[in-house]
Image 1 (spheres, rainbow over the protein chains, first blue to last red):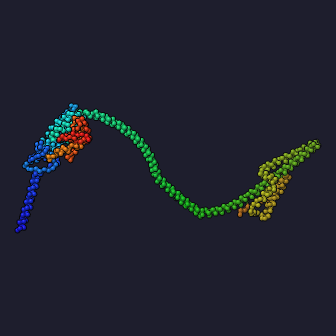
Image 2 (image 1 turned 90 degrees about the horizontal axis):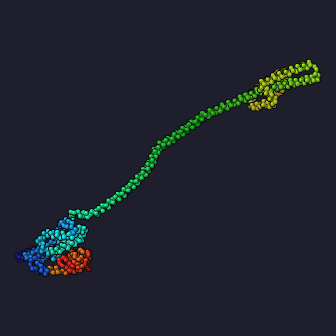
Length: 490
Length: 75
């Protein structure tokens, strides 16, 4: 019960405290006002005892902090300290009398000091929205005056003078309104007379002239360089083309060589093949030849050699026989001729000697006696006849001897060179390996004796010829065996 | 808040500022002075009437005419 009471009491206390807190907070909220950084609170009402303000209209200005305001007694108004701007557009005349249309903007605010805030509060507190219009009207006149003190060139270039004039003309008046001008900007200048344009024209023309000159010079230089470059390019292109042509020629040459290389090497290879084949064929031919030589030629050679040897031997024997026979005939004829000649010569000698002896005898008889004409005539006639006979005989014998010239010559020679003849006659016998004499062994000696005795026979024949003055042909002695040398082939 | 403006007035005197608009005879100049935690521009006259003070010169506030006018002298 007690605890219930206590609990109820405590609850009531808590509720009361909460209510009190709520009420207090509501009161505080209603009475405590805070000035924002960009605003000033203007408080008017209860007991305003402020030293500076007392001489003024008696209101309180609070900036940047909170203050207690008694509701119902005091009134709080806010004055914005924000930046404001006003556009201006005016027609005006410059110091030189040139009409311009200027568009500008002025940027201003309420001054931050208490005096400025008080001035502004008294003028604009209920007309903050119309502040821009008021300032516009005010500044239009100021701007016109400012521009009237300036030239166009100054407006464009001399900012310092613009701001200075703005301050001079508008500063004090704005101070009256509690405002300060942060900036005045001229945004646009319209120039109906074209003053600004003309101002720029000389410079523009000069610049344009310079630009044109520079452009022309540059163009000229560029063209020159371009042409030089073109010439150089053409030159180098020519050199390049020449070189390319040279290289192309080399390439073509090499390509042609390469193209020929195939057939060439093929031909070379084929040539080698042919050479080898030729060698093979030669070797085969050699082999065949050698085989032929061994199989055919050697035996044939042997056979031929055999036959040749045989034939040669036969021929040798034939030749030897023929030679011997010819020699024999020759010797025979020679011997005959020599015999005849010797006989004729001897006869002629004898006739001559006899005639000489007769003539000498006749002459000696004639000279010694010189008388007997008949005898002398007879002797002379005999002598003439004998002489004629002898001469005729001699002529005949010589004619015969001439007819058988060879024989006579040989006979003459034979008589002179008998020993050599005999030697020659004996020679064949020395050369003959085998001598077959048909008459037997007796024949040899006979032959030799005959050959040797032919000399003597020749002498006898000669003597016979000398003895026979009738001119008979000497006849070889009968019964002489024929010398026959028969060479026999072995 | 009664002492506020007076305090400000006293604070202004002796402050050093910088000329932002040339001060010349017959022309209203401008100085920037650091005050109230920021910097504000004030219309300025030279203490010597014939004196010309160029831009960028450091000046000291010798006199204050509320709300926005000061008389300065070069430091």
